[in-house]
Image 1 (cartoon, rainbow, N blue to C red):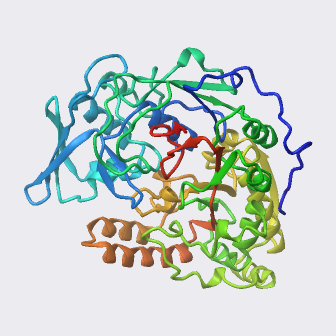
Image 2 (cartoon, rainbow, N blue to C red; image 1 turned 45 degrees about the horizontal axis):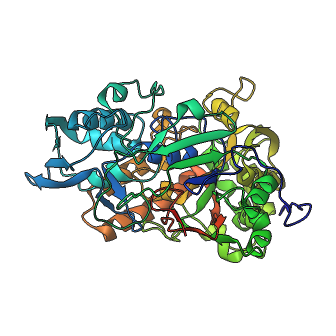
Length: 526
């Protein structure tokens, strides 16, 4: 399963676009994972839009390497009335890119818009009696009950982003993109220089005032910009992107392709490293409202066929054992809520004979299974090939639907039968922080028609999720998450496929990158 690409001439440079060549020392040349399609980070769960969003927009709180919230746009907050009154105070010097001052009214409107797209935000607003701006610098939450996780709800780095916008933009329907990008973040978006499918440009916002304190990691701490200009050049071909980096025509490649790591490691001018130790997590999401996966016994019958090791080795290669972790449960590996409770069915050799027998006993009669695989995502394509083989060996009648990622998302929203344009299962991946806890874990919700594609209805998991918010301490939260994992093994909202680490690669003279995903403040040329 492990795919290797051969480059013609390991040190050869493939001619790069003119926008990449002959740049000044004040420009950072970056190769993103894919093209930027959606510009509004509130309306999507796309990570490329999240990364873009953090350049243009700022957030009230940042998130540090311990997944804790620290003040970012706010100077601080006070909590009164037994935890039911929060006053957040904006720090001095905040300004929108159009020259106007950031006000608490802007932030209130932004929070309300984001909360309609984010499950953590939805829970926060359901707990809120009143969200208001008593003056230009104060954001006030009057709560029905204590909600100590309010800061991390507003500052989590998982998608979608709680981006602050001017009030007139924040009043936009949250299911439509804002008509223009005016933020208060450290960079301006240059709409006039955008070339869809090719180039995205940002320039330093001279009016940005960084925090004076905080850890410089993830989205926390001072955001000091050392480049006047950042250019994203889209290079879908992995060989082209890698050769551009080796030749010095690019400074930073967001994803260092696993099959090309030996080539990059041999070059003395290139550094390969892992910035995000939560990595990526893979999954097969199943459709709970259409046969055959509307039958929970059929869902459970497949556990003995789920081969996480093969999925991970297809991505990183059999020798890179330090770059993946199995078995993986329903929370990101190495994060506070993760455990190995209930994962016995994922250990040891796979037993396809047992899976076939269990499927027959559960009532599977050869119904077609339409498996969607996003063809434009190399990790998902590689995992999808393994999943196809697993399903077939288990005795499922599999039809593969390999299609561009956004087209797959469109079909994912259809609830009908396969004949009506519906689907049975799809392969996708998430960053580990999206499986951090029950608050923002979209794929672990059991809220049926109101939930994520697949529409799982799991009342017990919803009850446990509610209890998690009221847990008095970390130990109690972890105990609840162990119960959630046991319930998920029984209900099977999806099949975890393992966790893999995604290295990044950059020229050796690029320094001071923040731990976490790709952010562009504090980075400098050494």
